[in-house]
Structure formats: C-alpha cells, structure tokens
Image 1 (cartoon, rainbow, N blue to C red):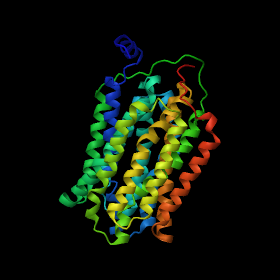
Image 2: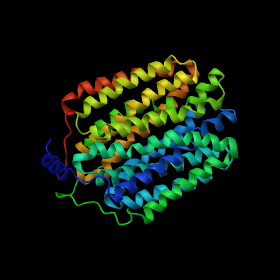
Image 3: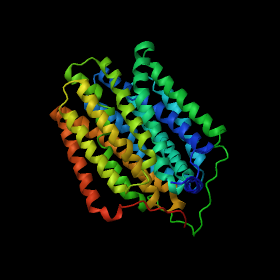
Image 4: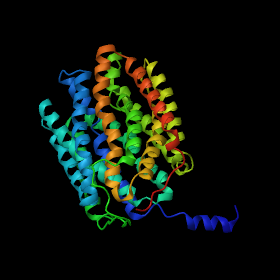
Length: 401
C-alpha cells in the first residue's frame, strides 16, 4: 500500500481509544476484578462449612438468578433513564456487597449473593451498553475485544490474589478488596471522563419498548451455549482438586495461566475480529472449546487440567467478543440498553445454570462426566450455527434508525 493510500485508510478509520472508552474499560476492569478476587474463596468457604459441590453450585446460582431476572429491566432504565447512573448504582452496591460478605453465615451469604447479583445486572448492562454506544460501527469487533480484555485480565490475576490474601491475612481480606475495587470503579463513573457522557442521538421514530431486543436474541443463545462450560474452569477447580486429593495451593498457578491465555489471545485477535464472518469465528471458537474440554476430561492432575483450561480460554478470547459485536450489529441502535441486556443474559444464564448443572453432575457421576456433557453442549452450538448460517455471515453495520 502506498503512503497516500495508508494515509487515506487512516483517515477513514475512526478513533477508538478515546478518553471515555478508556474510562469505561477501567470501570469494567475494576468491576470484574472485584468479582474474581472472591471467586475461588466462596467454594472454599462452602466446603469448609460442610457443603458439597451441589451447594457450591447453588451459592453461585443465587448470584445469577437476580442478575438474569432483572437485566431486561436494567436495559430499559439504560435506554429511557440514564446509562451512567445505572452503571454508578451497580458499582455502589457491588462495593457494599463485598464488605457485607464478612457476616459469617451461609444463609447471609445466600442473601448477599442475591443483592450482589442485582448490582451485577446494573453493572453489566450499563457497562456493555456504554461500550456499544462509544464504539465506532466500523470497529465494533475490536472495541468488544478490548472491553472483553478486562474480565480476562481480572481472571488472570485476581483469583490468585484472592487465594494469597486468604492465606496471608485470613478470610476478611479478599472481601474487603472486593469492596474497595467497587468503590474505585464508582469514583471513575462519578468523576472521570464518563461524568458528562451523553449517547449520540440516533435518527428515526421512537423504538419499541419491549424488554428483549430481538436482534440480540440469537447472539445471546450462542453465548449461553458456549459459556455453559465456563464455571467448570473457573468455579469448580477447587472441587476437582478435592476429588483428587490435590492440595489447594497447586491452583495458585492455574488461574494466571487460564487468564494469561485469555488475555494474550484476545489482545492479538482484537484487530482481526471485524474482518471475518461472525458465524465462522464463533464456529472456530466452539471447535477449539471442544478440544479444551476433551483435554480436561482426561485430566488427573492440575497440570493437565490447566492445559485444557488454557485451550478453552483461548477459544473464549475471540468467541465472546465476536458474539457481542454480532449483537450490536443486529440490534436497533436506539435500543442498545435492551440489546446489551438481552445479549449479556446469555453469559449470566450460563453461569447460573452451569454452576447448578455441573454441581449435580459432579456429585452424581464424578469426573470426567461434566466435561463430556459440556462437549455435547458445544456440538449443539455448532448445529445452531449451521441452522442459522445464512443470517450469520459478514458483519452488518446498523448505524441509524
């Protein structure tokens, strides 16, 4: 390409890394970090209190139920009230919930999980919607990949941090860290570049007011099927270790490798996500996820499990951002709050249903049964992609009413 052509291409390519977009990524990082710092601590607490894998799954699912049930209403609040204030409210309650976990009672933990899940619905809907409004249409895949780096970084670092805080300072430390991270995110929403955030106006008549955005439904279903395996790799490794008589300390390296694979592949793949058909990218990710699950099914040590988890993480690195961009492509731009609420239901349903499902499967059939069932779910995803292949070709940019 000649220098003149390169200059013209640069002019045609809109800026992505603006102050508000960097700020919303920082808020996303802090929000996910607050969640993942306590992720490995909750299963340990449940097991210490005499619980089993099924109870671990129910504690995780208690978080997901309100997050799923209330998310469509959060989408309407984003569209009809204030994107920024919904996000701020979510961060505030996340901070308060982190401290409230210090009450030493399983019953109280269940109650806090419900409150925390409500806040998570506001945080996820508000954050994804703001990202969708800030992303230039020509760079939606890249923007989605950048924003989705934030949970990857949090997964890479914070579970190990939580375990180290638990070992060094005792049970309160990870939960105090959870609260402080939430407060830091709230400070950015309240006083940073997002303070004056206003979505760009979109021409056209007033959009429909339903809670579910139809254009985002298929990407939501794909996200649900793909991410149903997620809790196997991020919630249940302590249960796997206990079933094999493996010391919990061996998992300290597991989480950074899982997160490192997620972050590394996501960072490298982001700029290419807008160049290939969305459906083809998701199919490749599902096939790679099957490979990771097959390795995990054969695991008899943390080392082998880590290899399987890293393969699955690499698949998730480019698959989830692609499905998010697909949801934005297919949705009414006047209803991005409803669209992101609809799309993110997929991941949250996968967390809740997956946690409950895998706990029951593990108690009933032990390992490697959950990984084999998860492979079957990925095959269902591939069948759905095949059935809707004509609707999932090259990206379709919806930019106006």
